[in-house]
Length: 310
Ligand SMILES: Nc1ncnc2c1ncn2[C@@H]1O[C@H](COP(=O)(O)OP(=O)(O)OP(=O)(O)O)[C@@H](O)[C@H]1O
Ligand SMILES: [Mg+2]
Image (cartoon, rainbow, N blue to C red; front, top):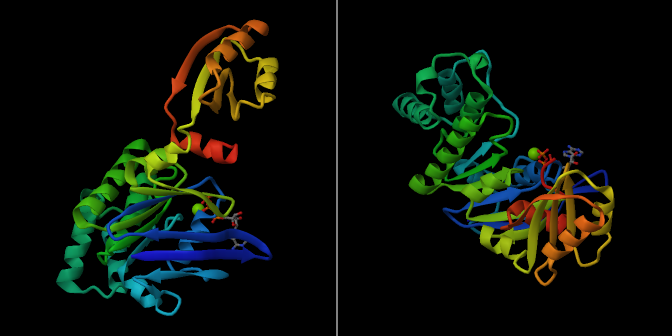
């Protein structure tokens, strides 16, 4: 459906998106996962034809959107990272306003506004002005605006940032339903790995403007299939022990959070015996030790040496 090739954005000689290529098949949910400042918004704004690329192209069913942006805009709904609503208007009035921009009229307009209010779970609050809504309700309405013209493709830029877990679950379930029941293709941007793992058929991991890995969750975790992750809780923190672990060439990663250490090493390294030996050497008792199944967070850590979230 959509093919992105060599997408690049350069601001004053600094490339914030570098040679990004990706594709979306019809009916797929695709995740774009990356930390703050990775270049996610810049990339998807170019894909949505809201921002001119420095280089590269976006093809919709084989045709460049640079020449035919209207083809894409007709089938695309964009949920921006920043909430764009009229605070003094009600949900119903906001939706009616945006529906008119899409050229919807009378019965059809009324029907679409009702459908969308239902979908985002705001039918009972439709008459209340947006100013009185919670953050989660505003987010839901922001998504509703993008759905008014029955898009075939939606691009969502971190639609769950800063909201309560209940609203977040509601949004995730609603997006899943849109995909499963209406066959809408979804490009979903997030820095929460659990969200893309729950929602997405395939994931692109982005860091410093570049796609550093892509595939299904299973494929991405497969990157770590040759390694083990061990989580060790200590009775107290020990700089000496951490230092010694970090200096070892056979350990690929050491992450420290208070008294908890997360170690990644090739499967042939016996992390258990090593950790026990070091705890005896430095006189630090171990309170628990656990071999973990890899998460996407671990994949990111492995690829970049950093954690996805602070
Ligand atoms: N108009 C601009 N001019 C100069 N630099 C920009 C501009 N827009 C974005 N950038 C820079 O590009 C980088 C990527 O920003 P972008 O907003 O795409 O990241 P992001 O992955 O969406 O981050 P976040 O998770 O915080 O939304 C940042 O370093 C940002 O400062
Ligand atoms: Mg962003």
